[in-house]
Image (spheres, helix red, strand yellow):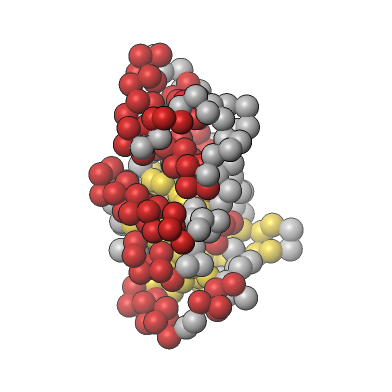
Length: 229
């Protein structure tokens, strides 16, 4: 569950005021909106990467407003994957568990599980340089899921992929959600992604959220170009 209660965020001349949002536990929610409307800011606030001026943030039924990112039990896949250039794929998959000081045997087992599930076992000793866009995103998703988060945040995760890879990643994200039951908030400009994945569609406009049937109707009426203006 993701719940924003009267959130206000002010940042470098940008302001969101009295934002309210609710995503049920286990839902796959897709958030759409024009570039610059504040979608990523909302996601970063939920992760604890952006300060809020007022309001409360509840994740999985817990008030996390004052908690640092590492204590919010969330996984994040940034838009560019943000892989560490000096780390191997294996090290990326184990990173979240190592910083939590989990036993080496537990880390190795989880890395093996993720690598097999995401079909990147043959890449474990490779570094990000030279990986394809789809391979990089699989690694980023695995890293985000390694510590079994209750919520997975995806910021334009498929925006840089070619058409063939994009289709395969849609299938992967669908399976990730079905197999883990994780609550997902996925930011995108792509209507195809929204239609393929969204159990809950949210459109951000003028600092407010349009949800449910109203959002689906809005999406049906507007063209793709609307979202990149």
